[in-house]
Image 1 (cartoon, one colour):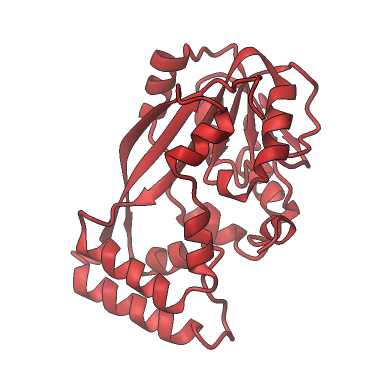
Image 2: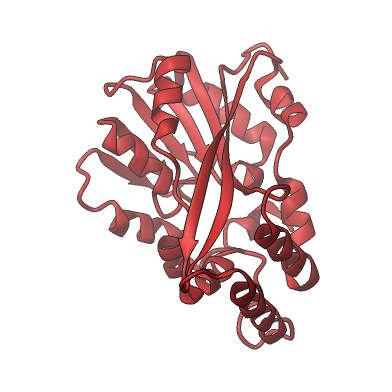
Length: 259
């Protein structure tokens, strides 16, 4: 997959993304207040802002948020989702070319998006737009593989039927790659518990919101959805399944002297 392809992968999944993707725990704000002195007056650049879930967290904290999203359909979905927030600004841009003024933001954030960035260009751009001593926060929701049978079976389904699933999964950063991005080992890391409770429609929508889920007409679509329903029937209680996640958060300051 090229980075150009990555910017278009969600064009036909916006509605499912808004309705069925997990959001971020409010405890994220407590963590960033404690570790990064986050305050309502800080300006946030949310890169790869998509449909606005992470932006919303900071908007509710009183921050001015600049959402930068390269995909037109996702950007429009985020603008609609956040239409009631006067402190939200939407830009057509990318991690490598945000369109934000130099030295103008206190935080750069990326929720469920960092693995799509071109690291060298994104790092250069983040350094450009951040104020001195500004912070970078990278986070995503990850399924708890070791703790729940449902998520292990769901993972097996993705491996069997997902389109380029292994490539997308392998693109998620490990700590070592983030230390290289920050050009320092001095970065913070925290996992926060998160979960979704989904009926069958929601379980289907959660799967179909993923870029690697086959679409109707693909040879893998029908067997994947049949397998998903089998998983649901095996684990539902009163018509609901609970999908367990952790929200993994990395935070720190970029070392300007790094490559």
